[in-house]
Length: 145
Image 1 (tube, rainbow, N blue to C red):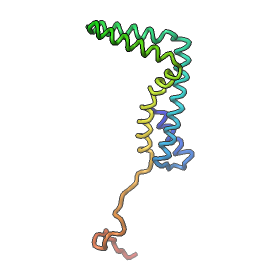
Image 2 (image 1 turned 60 degrees about the vertical axis):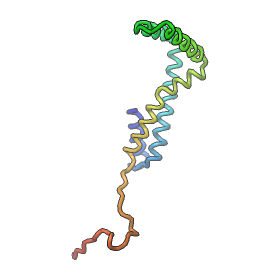
Image 3 (image 1 turned 90 degrees about the horizontal axis):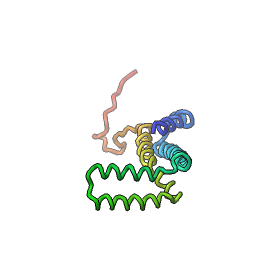
Image 4 (image 1 turned 45 degrees about the horizontal axis):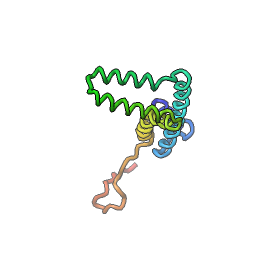
């Protein structure tokens, strides 16, 4: 998230001449988030297919140990085991694996750049409209030079 903020701020300061709208900050932040999520997916695929090929088996084993240590009933353990085996089969599909891995950091990046876009966009002051009746208009002082 820090990189999203720094990227949007750098875009505002270096390319947009110090002013950026919320919409443009949103676009830049979304692009940075998408690129960083894609890099995360590539890194995870490389790691999980080479260094941690048995990740899902170890994850299932550790999760079941924790479940048994918590004192869960036998049918609860059987139900969780069936769910984990089903997820393990789905995780073998590369498209599912990419989608799940992409969805890990994306919501955080989305929330972050929405917040940063609102902070980096210029603040707009709201004034009374000029078409109000004359008696509601703010007074102007008449000063002689």
